[in-house]
Image (cartoon, rainbow, N blue to C red):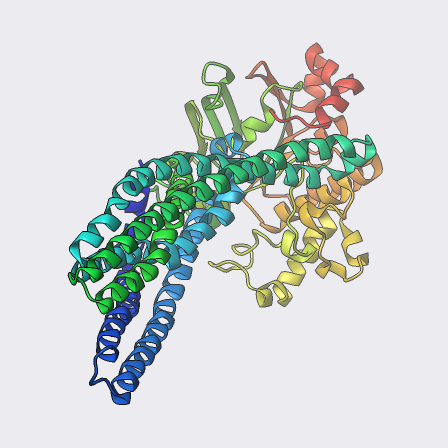
Length: 604
C-alpha cells in the first residue's frame, strides 16, 4: 500500500523530475565531498608521522580539507535551490486540483464528509507532502547512497573492521522495516485525529451564538479537549516510536565502533594496519553517524507522506457522478424559454437508496409562469428543487428544460439557465457586492468570472441596485462601507432576514430563465415579505419560477400551486381553487404550527 501512493506522487512530479534528480545528485556529491575528507586525513596522518614530513604536506592537506568543505556547503546550497521551487509547485498543483475536484463532486459526497477532514487534507497533508519532496525524499535517497559509499571506504581501510560495523546494519534494516509500517499506522491515525479536531473547531466557531446562548462553553471546551488530547496522545506515541528507533539505530553502530576500536588498536600493534587507515575508518564512521541517525526520521517521513498521499487520493479518486455528457444537446442559456417539466421523477438519496423520497412526480411549469410548491415538512419540496440544476440526479424519470433532459445538457449552460435561493442563506466572507454579483457574469454579458473592475462597472452597479431593491435589501447601503462592506464568514454579521434578502438578491442578479426559490422569505416579517413579493412579481415577469412556500402570503406570488404529498404531486391549480376543493391544502395553509415548523429548516 505504501508504494502505490508514492508511485502516484512520482507521476505528479513528472514536469520537475529532471530538476529534482539533479537535486539528488548534487546532494549525494555534497556527501561524497564530506566522505573524501577522511581519506585526506589518512594521507595527512601517514605523512606527518614519517621522518620526511614537512610544513608543505600539512598545508596542502589543510587546503584540500577547506576546499572540500567549501564544495560541500556550496553543493548543499544548490540542492536547496533545485528542490524548493519544484516542491512548492507540486504542492500548488495538488492543492488547486483538489479544490477543483471538490467543486465538481456531487452533493452526495459532501453530505458524507466532514469539512475539517477535507480542510486537513487540503492544508496539513499537502504541506507534509511538499516537505517530503523538498527534503525528506532527497535525503532518504542521499542517506542510502552515502551509507553505501561510506561502507566501501570502510572496507578499504580494513575489511574486518568494516564487517564489525556492518554487523550492526542487519538488525537495523529489519527494525527499520517494522518501524516504517508502525509509524505509518500512527501517522494515519494522527492525520485523521487532526481532521476531527479541525471539524470540532469549525463547528464551535460557526455555532458560537448557540453555545453562548445555552451557556455550553464548558461543554464545547470538553469536546475540544478530548479531540486535542487524542491528537496529543498519538503525537507522543509517534515521538516515542522515533526516539526508540533513533536510540537503537544510534546504539548499535556505537557498540560496533567500540568493538572496532579495540580490534583496530590490536591490528596496529601487530603491524596489520597503520594509524592513518584507522583514523580514516573512524572519521568516515563519524560522518556516517548523521545519515544513520537521520535515516529513521526519513523513513518515518516517507511513511507519514504515504499516509498523507493516501488521504489525498481518497478525495481525488472519489467519482464525479454528475458531469456534462460527452456530446451535450445544442442548448444555450441565453435563448432558453424556461419551460420546466418533471416527467415521472423518482429520487432516493445515495446513502438511503431504499428510502425513496419522490415517487413518479409529474409536473409542468410553463415558460414565464410562477408556480408555488406546497407540502408538509418532509414531503420532498427542497429536494425536488435541487434536481433541476443537477445538484442531485434523479433516480428514475427525467427533468426537462425546454424539452431537453437536464442530463443531456452541458452543466455550465444548465446552471447558467437556473438560479437558486435556498432557505438557509449561505453567504461568503466577502463584501455585499461580491456576494450579490457572484453568479452575474452571464447577466453582464461576460463568459468569464467577474473581476473587481467588472463588479464596479456601471452595468454591474445598475444590476446590483436592481437586485437589492427587488429583495428589499437597501440596508446594504447603510452599512459602514456600503455595499463594499465585508460581512464576515457566512455573513454572520447580518441578521437572518438580512442574509436571506442578500441571498435572494444574488439569485435575482443572475437573471436566470428559471428561478428556484426555496422558501426564501421565511425569515422576513409580514410587511417586508409583502414588499418583496410585490417587487418579485414585477421583476420576475417572463422568468419561470418554482418557489417552495409555506405561508399563504408567499403562495400569493404564484400563478399556480402544486401540492406535494408523500413524494407525489397530488394536485395542481390556483391558490383559490385548491383552497376551495382540497381540505388537505386548506389544512397546510391554515395551520400556523405546521408553517412555522416548516419555515424553521426544512432540509428535505
